[in-house]
Length: 190
Image (cartoon, rainbow, N blue to C red; front, side, top):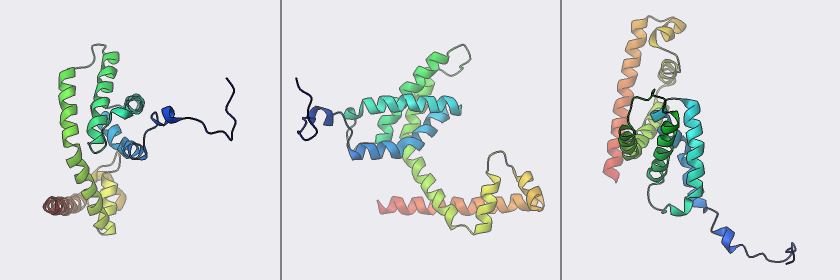
């Protein structure tokens, strides 16, 4: 059998079935952050979550033909991630894990069920943060930065601690009201 020449057409119809379409690739890419956070919420270790995400991605990629376009990609990939989390737990089972596999499966199912709502809330919060006055946004970002608390922020700003806590409370109320309004408006529009 001769090697195909570069100018000869090659029958690659079988290989085309092995390649996900552009919509699948877009859904896959868009889901990575959510999927990582979903996994991290159940293993509470960044390194392990990254490893489980990689294992999950390998399975997702190998099963791409089983995904039905038009259904929830996150629900489908979240179930795959749940199985990978359970496999991880089985490997790590050295008497240290206190939660049962049934409990983890139930939490995972609930998280998948709530994921769309939580994503809408996250998007609304992001928009509401963008709408804050610059000083308020900077104060909130400083307070909720990793390892920070109100006392540290107050010291750095040279403000009384009580004043910083009052400002943060006021800003949180503004954000809560803004998110609530946005979610209500979105619910009415649909």
